[in-house]
Length: 222
DNA sequence: TCGTGATCATCC
DNA sequence: GGATGATCACGA
Image (tube, rainbow, N blue to C red; front, side):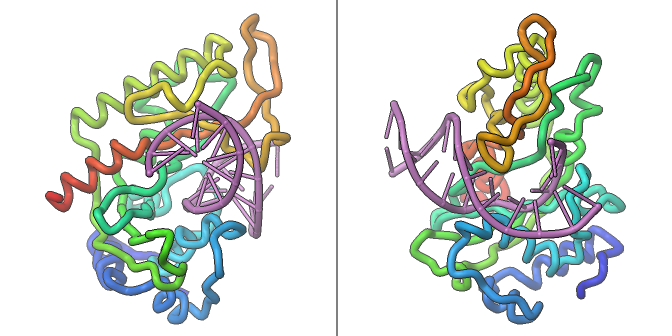
């Protein structure tokens, strides 16, 4: 049981202690078994890092370290440092969003300060052999904030106008909206074109790969 | 059912 | 081969 970090520096120090280790090494230290595949354990790496860094396990819509104002994100990369997947951020509200601003949004709250932990995750590597990279704290610069806010406002306007079912993952420069549920049968309430309540897929915001790639490039001067 | 942790797997 | 839409596990 790892205790919660009391400061950003302590959190970062801990994360740096993990750099260079394989997931097997970290799992062994925590007494956890390494799954053969992530197919039925998609969040395993993220959960492992949460345990190793003392994050409070839970599914509350807030940052992983609220008292530090920091969100923890693992990101799978290949040997060249390119992200292998988009990055899930949070669910989006589909009703009662009138008047909601970017600054008040949960997505902004989560992305204003992120502890990124790259994981060398080439598909050829067994889960346990995947290696933890150098962690770093990221705060979006003015340009990045602007891009995210633009996408968010465009998407939220479509949702407010009842156009939820016309939104695809293609819209947005750096953010995208995609289904985020157990499966295609899991539905939630949304708003239709005539303002009526409809049942639709829950959606979540994701960061597109070129955006997170650029963050890594900026950090490591790749 | 919602929201967390995400990756899978099919389609283009 | 890469991105989109679909999916897996779990706690509350």
